[in-house]
Image 1: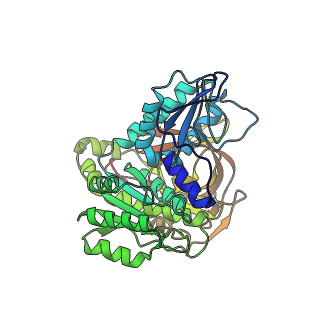
Image 2: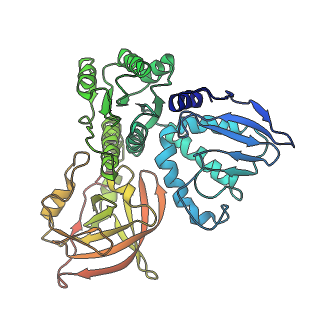
Image 3: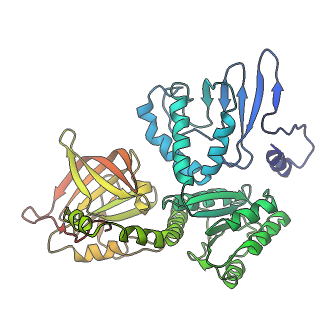
Length: 457
């Protein structure tokens, strides 16, 4: 693609043979192998092209339709084994580009029947092509139905701009807000202006100060920005970043609301940095959806609210550690679900920070709170933590065998592993099995949570 050629020129700095192709162009390799190209920008790079071989009916899709899953199977014959990872991969890399996914699927529909999808990650798709491409369509349509859109601007070949902005975009999509990403270096000024005009929020991963094209694009963003929009700025850690403070000041002067403190990155980004970006994105999305959510809460019938509120539950703290990142959540929607194996379910809101640490195969601890001795823990974990904050500061804990924190004041704890997840509107129903557990006070009772109304926590 034209964008790919520009990237390569910046890398090699010497002449090379090239042929720029557009959507629908064909290249005859002989022996019946005629390649047809499908432009699929932002899946998940600006220069992505799908390639279809008419002889073998194989579609090569780079990152799209892939998953981070490794086994001895070359193909997708075991759908149940891969579908959880397939969804998680979509959420991380494709959901922030849902509109681009739908555009690519539309172009794919113009091809003859696709026999196999050869992805860049995970097994090749042969047995479930229709089913798995259909899921991309379904998820992307749901993602783009939101009334609210956030524009995320980054520079794909600079520093850590792409990965950081992708984490932030993932956090935004968890709140039900649509995201559109755009590379500042290769973006058309008209495209930038139109995207800013229809967006409720703007996110900018700072471009290199020396890039004339990126600076011109930033100027276009500033010219098109308007009051009542929200904005978030983060560094790209590329060595020559545009300073964040003057940029934040310019948006403030235009009347925009800053959604989160500018993210300044002083060391090579690690897991904690990406988690900070995801949480900042969730904060931005929640800010944009606050009024809508309040309206929905008020719309439910009063008697139904009261009746639903009479469903009580225990009080628990879910704690997890994944790599260097730790998380926690106060939970009351917990219920035992099976004897063989011992298992239970938890309802986890999609926009909870800990949701990313409760994928299939992840491990965590269920801490049971004690009746008459839970207020301190409940107050602490009900607080709204700023992005990247340590949830366990000032709380006594010790590591479980699976690495997750056990709260010292808990009545009991269980070490658990996520076995499956079911999507349920604004929550995930997470089914987990129990590996081990202990009760610290055998005669004490579990704290119980009674609500008056049932349409919010």
